[in-house]
Length: 379
Ligand code: CAA
Image 1 (cartoon, rainbow, N blue to C red):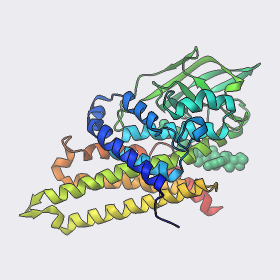
Image 2 (image 1 turned 180 degrees about the vertical axis):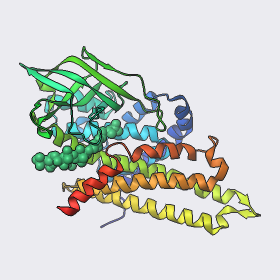
Image 3 (image 1 turned 180 degrees about the horizontal axis):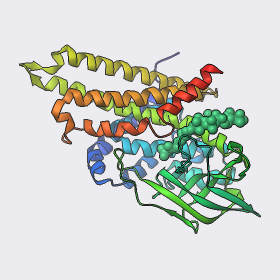
Image 4 (image 1 turned 120 degrees about the horizontal axis):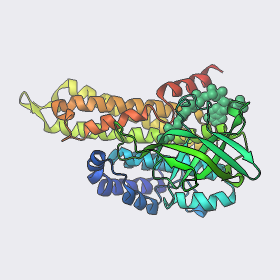
């Protein structure tokens, strides 16, 4: 395995790094406080190609590989994890599914504008009773001629209140479990479609999360992504890609917590010397660096397998599991290194701590990732 980045990978990382440090980092604490969705910076990211990184150039993306995607999401999330969440959803949960399952018409109507963030997408899978048990979908789609009539509700939907369209999972056959699920592209201006108020969250507060309600929404059959009954497999396939994105988001948060700890440990003096001279601090720094490097390598491995066209479900689950638990652990240690100051909003580590937690929950909890890994090890 070659650990050297290619020129293109380095270029995309540097572009994301520059944008993150110049544009995202200065506003991250403010939008965390105000919970303001950063439309303008997201649009700029769309113009730079950061919302369609592995979308083919013919559909308006930059056609780069998944390692480039990991590098870019890490850089963005290091500066602003809320922006990293939106970026990951748009790239993986929205664009990836359209690239792989969309018809030419769907690609023109949805993928091309999504890759440049002219259209914002959302991924409507979770329902009140269908969290980890994603196959327990109750949103119903009854076929009438060349339309589906959709009724139901979704919750915890990233971009729910700002999206132009939703990649929506619905039950088209109540007699089947996962084989009765289909996927529809639903424009949010469809009569009968509405969303709830933005949720008040612990972290990634500038990202928009709402419920969705569909009451007698008429959706053309031409808006079905994939075949009828294929929806659950599409959701799982898309989530494999998504888990690499969330792993990269977690990696960015962990790296930010690490860098803040190194800086603080070298500046802060106690007992007449910088606290970095104490072994208690050195061990935390060493463990952070080691775990972050391991998370990065797991992510690169999953990304490489994906780009080779091999099944990477297990590797994506491992990378997401390890990176998210590393982010939470590193953010906890970062507060410890900062002592009382780490608990205050004056320093960014309390934000990293709050932002890290969601990475262990969304796109499959750590328990779901362990389930997926165990399934592959025990078959
Ligand atoms: N790729 C392709 N097919 C897959 C697959 C994958 N990764 N995983 C499973 N399948 C297939 C199986 O092969 C099986 O197919 P057959 O019937 O043909 O054999 C079928 O799907 C059903 O598989 P399971 O029996 O394993 O399904 P299950 O009901 O036991 O569920 C699960 C498995 C892993 C727990 C799954 O439900 C899951 O991933 N749950 C977590 C849901 C989740 O991640 N939600 C995230 C919401 S989106 C979000 O958070 C976005 C956001 O806003 C940021």
